[in-house]
Image (cartoon, rainbow, N blue to C red; front, side, top):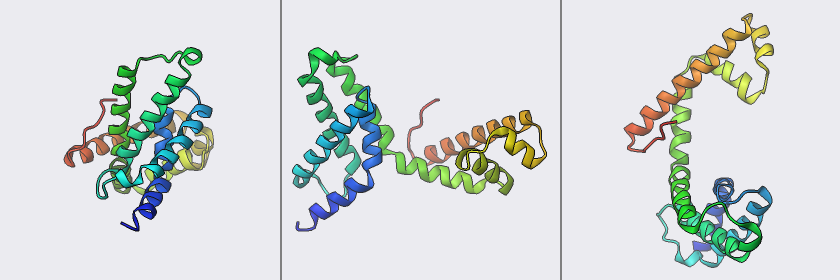
Amino acid sequence: MSDAPADIIKELTSGQRRLYGYVLTLVPSPAEADDILQETNLAILRKADTFTPGTNFLAWACRIAFNQAMTYYRKRRRELRPLFDDEVMGALATEAVEVFGAFDERLGALRGCMEKLGDRKRELLQRFYFDEQSVAEIASARGQSEPTVRVTIHRIRGNLLECIRRSLAGAGIPTSPA
């Protein structure tokens, strides 16, 4: 198919941050993750013809990234001394693929749950997480005490977590207990 490389490049570009996050779960440092990600990107482009359109690109790319990380460890085994053997790394990688594979669904659930919040609650989260205002700044602006703001943020987060879990469970997507 003549447009397959363009599709792969589009998928690779849009999934780059998630793929990098996955690679970071496999190696101890960002510098090593950068190297492995670069090798992974090259391998993905070389293997583009093996990707089946309509399947989960990120899961396929993560398998390639895992193989690149294992190759990296094998080449540098003596100096790196990985914390886990290949079998444990494989199990961890499989778990990470499952988590990253449902990223879009989790993000969609978060967005849906955020829309259900009242304006004041959304505004509080906006100030704290996106505008990076301190609890003291928020409390002053809202005319509330700092402990009240902290407790409110904590409760909103708990409510969001429960809403997200319900939403994902309704869609048949497993959630972690934490």
